Image 1 (cartoon, rainbow, N blue to C red):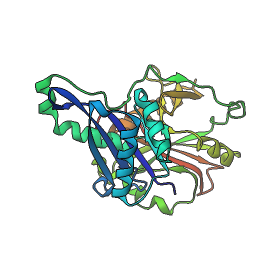
Image 2 (image 1 turned 180 degrees about the vertical axis):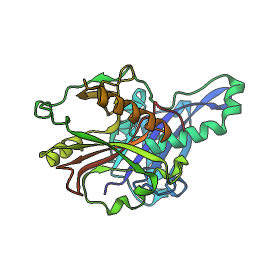
Image 3 (image 1 turned 45 degrees about the horizontal axis):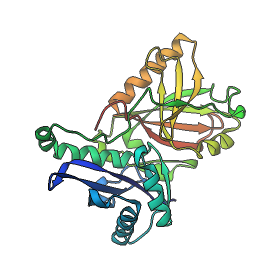
Image 4 (image 1 turned 90 degrees about the horizontal axis):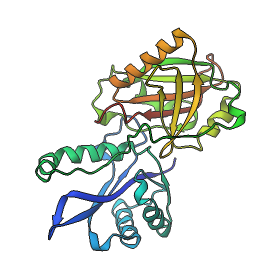
Length: 293
């Protein structure tokens, strides 16, 4: 299993030195098991004077974090597009792969938690920092490969699992996929986690194809729920299904309502047929547009 870290490097309006903003790097481990506490995950933060904001300083901070953790990550994800060149350069110099992605759920949680602690300070200075990319209209459409356009996602079920069902997810037979810790979000063990399970005789190659993308969320069109989008990467989305059946559209609306109750947490699964227990692919996803933690 890959060791994944999540990173942000940005100017914080909460800290000042000689009336100048200070920058800060945040690095945290991606918790891969649903029941892992975020408090037990590796976290690192360091302030940076605005005069030394560059890839050299950031590389040194990353190396300091690795020394503190006693290990190096295989991959670093980051969501802040504006800092893309600097972050990629710093990670490359530290010999770590870096990719832009909205799949920074642990980092988002940490930033939201920290911002709440600084709420009074932010109110006094009347300033905020854009922490998480939750844009809807900015997503750009990306077409599916031709091999996946031939009704490959037309057969699916809406499936409900409980939070407690994920306690032993590491024991499930899963080919491709990725999970994360849902315990920090304060959901009861009986809270419903909605998901979509797709069935196809080509389940394994479809799951393999999906594994090459940064899967973020599944979302039905907010206007009439007749289109299912797969959100990926930093700002991409693809059409998986177009619905024209009233019953299916109602199921889509119910799926979105359940996501609201689960704080945006949901899942995507791929199976060869409903009769097998193995998953060719299984991903825990999160819709950050639903609500802030």
